[in-house]
Length: 428
Image (cartoon, rainbow, N blue to C red):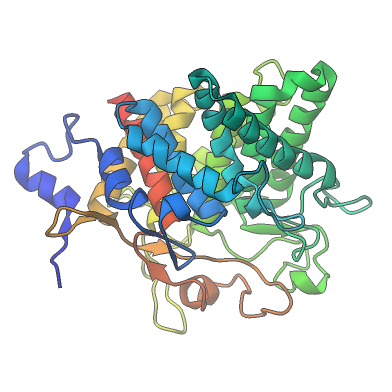
């Protein structure tokens, strides 16, 4: 077996200052060791150029595109993502998605950069295919995706999936809203200013709704899932009384990572003159403040279950652990939130820098061949539906569930680590 070396330890041994401003470009190392080779997507091994259309390969692809934008000499980065898009489209201008499934929409964000780049190259045929595909995804979400209906609370909120009726998941805010926001940013005025403004209101309402019902002001954290119909059979896990009626029991790290990342990504595109812009900024600041409270003081990272430390265990004798995908998402969102002016640098710069060094020291390993690996990632987690009662949102589930395995080289950690590294490298 090849011996793994902690990258953080390696740099501490090599350099008296530890992880210094003169560090190598870890974003490139992650792209070339993992994203362009093989990675896991919900325990399925993928190669990016031929990966199936899904939010995990889409997340990896987006991070590779952003690395190419930062380092444009790395043309193979762009070419691989274009190959992934063309493989998904199969010569056409659409991708197959499930009915009212937010997860199937997230990868559409790659089409904005591909569209602009191919248009600039004069390849109008591919540019138009990319635009038509992401337009169809946006229209499917805005006009056809199932929503919570009155008189239920949260009317207008998108179902996470058809099999989760009247449920909003923090995960889903990342899957749908940034793609919708990207379309409005690039193409929204084509449908007229009134439609554009109403669409931004629709996007903002998704965050305002889930934050209203899932945010615990005492803990300063958001519950993973909220159901507008807590007595529904598919919401068997939901709290049945106030406070926090309809919420799932625990604060899961990666769900808040998706949520925090979605907020800064949408705010990066949202017109500052829109009346909901201040409200989304305030939500972002509440999320940032709550996560700062539960950052592990020793490592700078975050735990799988945010409100506990490693002393909290389960009936299967597994204990809470520092988790790489959530920690990477938080690090990315802190840095980007500061860069776009939503978060105060004086308040969060040291938190973000400590988090980034924590990523390197806790989760990054280099094998004997110099290949990078990212360890300690939760493969998957969810709530229900009724046919799967084991997914009940308890501590035991998040530590022992059959789908909640701890793995390495998972795309849900690779993409955010690349994005966090790019933000750090911009700031260096």
